[in-house]
Image (cartoon, rainbow, N blue to C red; front, side, top):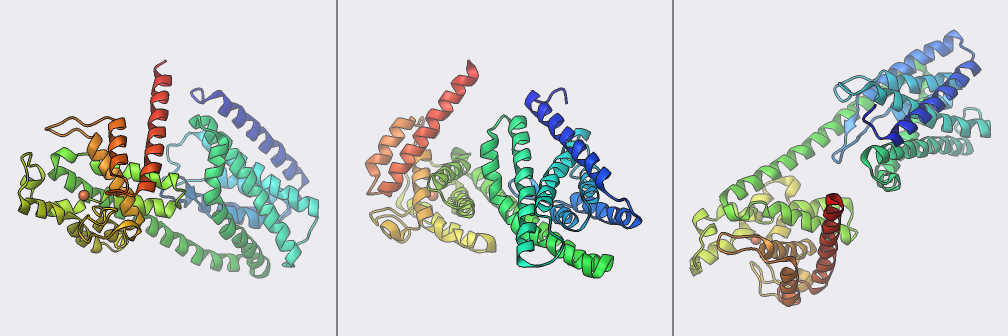
Length: 424
Ligand SMILES: [Fe+2]
């Protein structure tokens, strides 16, 4: 832990001490009858299994169902049992995801589970409710689960912020996106678990966990399938860039520029992913065009232009075959349409051209102007902006060009000032 930032070490000590105090107090408060010891063994085991079978998310991080196990414990059992279940879940987690990880991570995780569950316990203690499924009681259970989630998110955001040198507030805001659906699905599951365990004991709990683990397996397969799609996309782009030596890196640069535009337009995460795939794949149809034509430096013959102009339609045909990318085909087909309707392959004008195609057309043009070719050096950013503004309204969507120029210029200014700050 010597290499870790001092702010993280301070947080680690604070959270661990808080957890130890809570835990010791909870153990002291609890009547350790045989029933409570058996509950601790069963739920401690469930917590370890749940923590050890996480599902990795595409953008990093993972989810587990241990949150539901903890909430069930806090609803049903004395505070000493429920906090011990959380501590066991954090300390004895096993599996490939945690193999080789330093021990302090387990201690920190276990501590933040105990502190977060302590917050949930506090809500239940203040309201002094007994277990039932009356509407008011359910609201209080959800409030307890919510206070667990808020405490957990806050501690994790501060920890990640100090480890990565980022703003904890920004991490917190970013995490809300996945924490809310997590809460919506797992908090009621915790309540359901409590009901089943109260009515049907261990057998009921066992029967409930079977479909839960099957769902987990299905979700894991879905995540893996998405990764495979992404690998397919990357393989297609690599095949393309191996053919056309002068456009190496073009697709990924257009992808990045398109994502910047999507973010500036406050598109949903799903739409941005769609736009990114379409942008990265926009020229995939060039696979169907002869290398001699693609790499020709002299003036092209009419028939050769014709071959090059066929690449959007070829691209759409290739993409149509991949179910996941089916909708992207149309965007790829229209990325050479012009705003004035004089483009190809269909000559459709203005907003008849899909929005994503219009964005990609701008990013494509900008990257083509600023990139080096064997026969000429790439233009500067300012020259490219001038050129984009010149063709706005005829070739490109004028409103989108205006936004693009603003966003890309800002990004460049930021990059330059960051580079300068790093040098000094
Ligand atoms: Fe193209």
